[in-house]
Image (tube, rainbow, N blue to C red; front, top):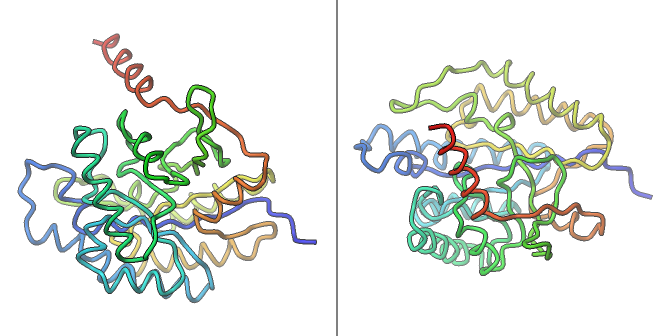
Length: 292
């Protein structure tokens, strides 16, 4: 009889490279120094991450932009060769909520093609940049057979998305800004919030882990990390400490996002939640109008 799993930890890495910065403000001049900050992710961060995962004998999910797949093919092949999952993260880190439907579709399809050339198969998962969706995004997810997404922040259990009450087969693995390294460490000339010490972030992430594990009801702890952010030496030391502490706790399993979604689908006990992107956008616009 297998041991009970009280909490599933899903380590995810958004490999954006330079597109993290080029997509933030199309009207700003993006110079070589800012681009080099993005390049640090695939050049330095990813190798450190792969060494850490190998040390702990863990598999993770890498949400990679098509740009990174095409411009850093050897690094992406290293990820695949190590047994990790490659998932969809648009082509150029375009936020779906900030582009028109035609541009979103073009980016979505181009990224699919890049990943298929790399891995020989269609990616199972999709994550939107900034976790923001348009009223077209979920239609693309369904049209191209994406099996799971990781964008929503309305829960801690996997659930199946429904439309008009009908099942879609798409599993959502909810995430949160509190479990995202960008909320604590991201910094650039055009983006300069306060910085946090790795020890402070360890306390935050470990506290969330212990609290969710204590519930003992099949939650998923989705940690969202960026190689160009978490990949600095001091932060990787903190992540190493965090993973080691998690592994020592009972009732904890580590999983790729794809495997976690598949397990939820097989369980027959998956929650459901209605998805209506266009209604959500209309409601948001209505709230905005009311505040004028």
